[in-house]
Length: 474
Image 1 (cartoon, rainbow, N blue to C red):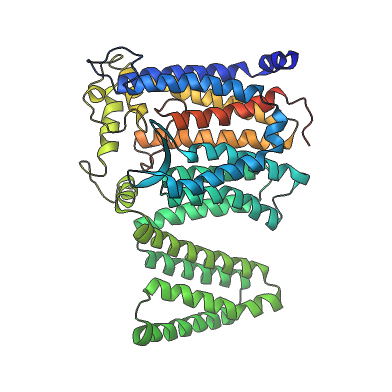
Image 2 (cartoon, rainbow, N blue to C red):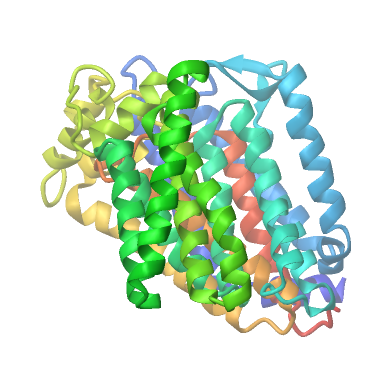
């Protein structure tokens, strides 16, 4: 009993205060978002705000359960929790309820649960347990591969449902790997991939492929300062390209020009591998790997856009980049969201007085677009206050993570920060038209039991670990 009292006293009060404020703000704004003059009572279980009240009460019970659980439980059973949640992600593909074309929910009578929301804290625990064991170094390929696998496995299972928005959130955990010593080359590569991704959306992939190959040849000439070698390499590349082009024209008849250039680059590179090895030309080898990787990435993006992504998902990306304009179709949500937030002005229209909110112009306003209600009824001041709460919480969690004595707690803490920041940035970015609409909730504010419980468990496991940071975790 004495230990439990000490644990409660050791919990970070600032984080808990922000958490409680967000719960209250979220509840009142869900009430405003679905306000019905025929149901004016704020505790009405037939309405979403009444159900959210039940979720909030259950959340408090979950907080108590998480806090009274010994911190060593999360340390020693991280892999088991992760494995159990992976099993649920597999089961939901078979037994789950189909909602809007995605099989993401278990339905138990009137209660629906989304395993992907809970798998976030399970993945964070498994990642922390693995990186903590034997003080593994991320610069080793095997360590990086296993850590990446822990992150990517649940993301792939969620993508199959398909729920691409939730799947993308898991990749935010790679931020943790950089904090734990992952080479900056991976970060630079990620930035280059992001640039190539947007270039592939804006320009024809064939033009980008030609530009990259030309740039690679120029850089190779600068590095080697050997024009003869460069001309020989260009000759071999052109000859191989011509042969593959002829074969495709007469026999295969299905390869695009971009694919022909990609295959030619790969074959030419194999011929030059011998030269790279004999001359110990590490710089040329790295240049070739970069070129081959870039061309493969462009090809995969092009394939994903045209073969994997659904038409409405592709349209959302194109609308964001200004490639297409569809204010009454795919872009309707974002257009109405921007109007709603902009109409709030500096101080807002007043609580329950938002016209965009009241007349339901913005779909999913109590879930993915809850920030619209805040912007319209509370204005810039209210929006700034809510964003400020998130910033305060994130900064506070970073401070807590840095003061941890065990690598396990620190890694888990940064996982919490990464996941919350990604949800916060993307959700508000969706509402103001900065990022594509991918349908993820705003932590602690959006309507929904699964997301609220998932975020709560994620946060309070870390607060529990921090409260017992003086204990020794191997």
